Length: 114
Image (cartoon, rainbow, N blue to C red; front, top):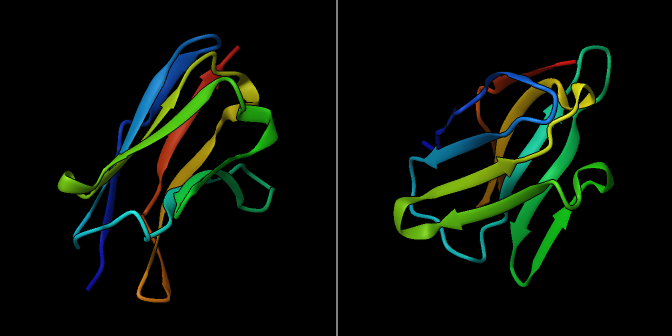
């Protein structure tokens, strides 16, 4: 069974930084898309950043502020979030596509105060 465990969320002031981590319970490879989504109260879940085969995508509002990286040897994906804004406040979910199925973590809360 595939499990994703996130960590690194918390409360930070605007302009601050946080680093999210997500560890998968299975071995991951470059061909496995892996990344982060977020869901703010009253809004739909949206893509934040994802790394897949030969491609890395970011949501427009986080470009230049967030970076995504992965360590396949550690089955881990990271999201470095800099210059955080109050509108980045949301629950952040780790995502993995593995053998054709989509998997999600339980989510980690990120709150940015103004």
